Length: 188
Image (cartoon, rainbow, N blue to C red; front, side, top):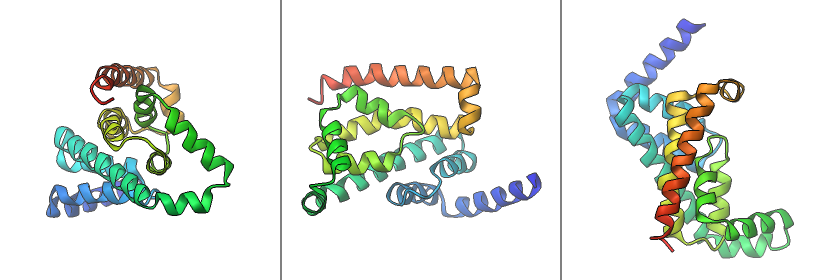
């Protein structure tokens, strides 16, 4: 079974390598719009195909761009959704939560590897969050998330039982939080 998986990975990485970084970039952008696709797999493939540094940068930039695309699509459709779902209590509650969320908490929410980014993108697009604040929060928050899926990339059960993995994520989250506190002074 392991041989078959390795052969599949080899075929995919050769295919991706033929098209250059654009293939890995587009896969992640498409995943941001179609959330059923496996982001963790695409990030791991980018790092495997293009190397640790370049694969990370491709994955991080594509994730940020894809999230902003989802955000802007929802922002453009905001009036239509508000009329249609104005009586839906769970959507109104989520929107109210996002309108009140602090910048640092938004960064942390975006940084957590198991947070449904698509829901946050939609909620932020439908909320009154300033697009510049959301963009800067994405720039900071997606670093730990991409790092997690690219370099740690374990299952949830393995991740929460491995102290080294937990320590890495906690350090990355603390760093993201501290950076967000500094950046918050400039994006108000």
